Image 1 (cartoon, rainbow, N blue to C red):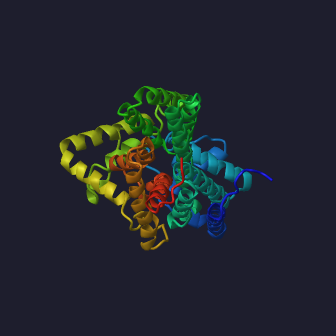
Image 2 (spheres, rainbow, N blue to C red):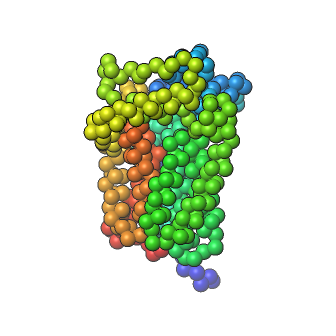
Image 3 (cartoon, rainbow, N blue to C red):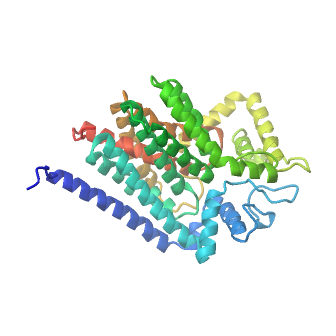
Length: 413
């Protein structure tokens, strides 16, 4: 007879709940993916641009937003935009279009699998920090989040970005543990975190700036030498991975930029709404990168002219991002306002508890960096409040750790 102790009934029950939550989360997402039609899946405003670029790629014309598509900002030169969006999500749409000619059905199924994978990664992080019951709570916070389920069926990259950021966060936690334990494979986890961030950046350009906040956190850390070494490895991996896209844009868009929509988004966040909201028209002959720079200069001028007004608008955007009402101003989201409270309030409240519980540990800052960065980006650039969904997995981990620690159920590390 084996001398190894058998897991007690509570551990078996916790594992059963973990399996059930992943199965339930996947079932809910797949059900919605098969129920909604193509028109419903593309109801969000940004979906039209992604679809237009994806279909251009599927037809062999590259990741170009063609003027004939009728979406996106007007191009005075009449040329297509080569760097309007990052290529990751249009590539997913193009693959679905080529494989089964039904992006509105195939992509939601793929995103349902991404959502289930995110659940598994979140459970793994929570279990390492505070035991099996923490993983159960963290998974429940995402499984019963109506917006996490709903956006799995929408043709926007929220769910794949969330998965990539969850992988980055998990690799970062392994890196921190390896550094604290004096392990030899810390560089491998740093490289994996950089690779995951590169994937997130290919889906959403703003993700690349996360390295700046992570670098600042490494500088103020007590173990700054080893952390900065890992940060440098992650940055190197990120730069190498993004280099082909930067070179391509230098040739086709006029500058080695990730995307050319930053200028207009920044400009839109500097002025009032209404009749004065129409942006100025760039001069004729300006290329795509020049048009972005044109709006950046105008935005900088408006910010310098009225900094207090811009700060007030930035603060209002941050509040809107984390307000538990409707998650977007568009009527395309067919969920009641109460869904926002179900989505945000439990996770946010428990995440703050987890942040307090782990306040003396570096993992607390690491888990909280992504939500802080998403807030800073939202302050500067206009965007939908659904951007917060991609960083909710980190908050779910903090929430699971916080609740089980308060209840005295945390496992030993």
